Amino acid sequence: MEELRRIAYHTVLRACGFASLAIFCVMIGLSFLPRSAFQAGGFLSLVMTLVLLLKAQEARTKDHRKTEMWLYLRKESRPPQAHAQRVISTLMRETYLTFARWTALVSVVMWTVALTFSIFGL
Image (cartoon, rainbow, N blue to C red; front, side, top):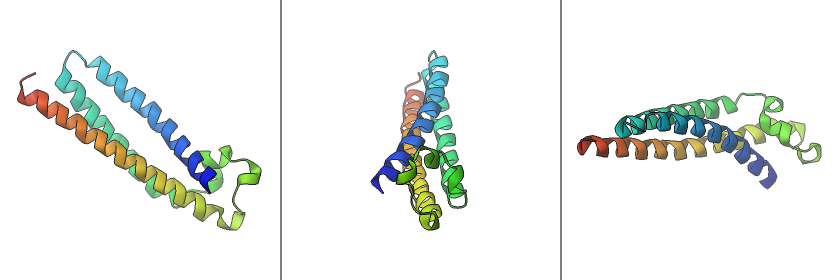
């Protein structure tokens, strides 16, 4: 079970890493306007949070054999077919929700920094 959780964590972490890289590139592109950069980062992080929440909702019904996690599992590590759908969908849902919480926190921090820049007139 721990291996399943680790693989779920790594698959979602990799996807969030790529999205974060894109957000970072947008923010670097707007770095000459710090308030706008953090507003864009906060907005895009919020979008990423919403996508993660949608993926968590979708995880309940998505066929477990079509998930990236299933492809990374060694054949001997895969749960029995009778329980695989329930186990994998539950793990993926929990993982998506965990990352959605973290991303929402990052979004709040970025919006707070943007508000601080706005207050100080930067």
